[in-house]
Image 1 (cartoon, helix red, strand yellow):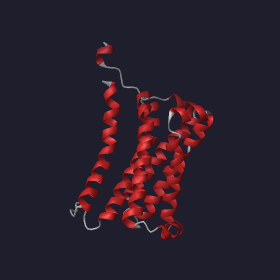
Image 2: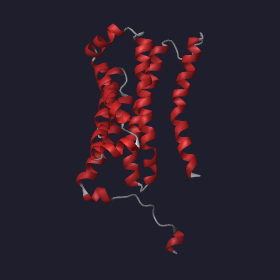
Image 3: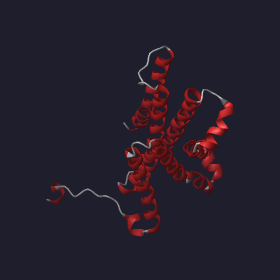
Image 4: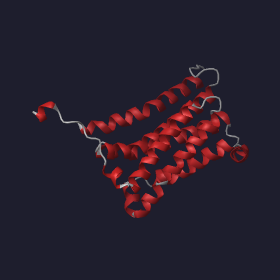
Length: 212
């Protein structure tokens, strides 16, 4: 049964991308299911799923230790690579539909718009994480592998700032994602510095059958 979990997680993570590809296919064939501003909708969708995957990646460590569930670490690499995948989709949507491949404007857009600067910086930091996410790279890098992959903390903060800067009219999503990032990073700090937090695990109360 456990062998089925990874394909299920893989498919579930891919479903939003499947919808995005389907919507783009329809749009290229003259059918619009994305509302009055399809490029903006695609940018928001791909961006939202990027930060969701980042938050989910951060959540795996607290879940693993608080609930004594080492099994979730089997999916860390997959979900982390999906975060990079959705970030790449987000960048492609920006270059294709919003910038229309005007290469001469890319540099000025990155420099002149702070939210693009922050988002592009987060993407650049994601690249080495994706390239070194495999076992071979982990063996070759040794202790440096963990140092490189701690960049996920900075990337997550930059992603939240990117969202805050874009969605100025409604900060609900920004507060949600920012709160989760602070919560999961805060747990790591507490676990590092507090032996009590490091030892703590949620344990279900004993059943009545066991007590009798």
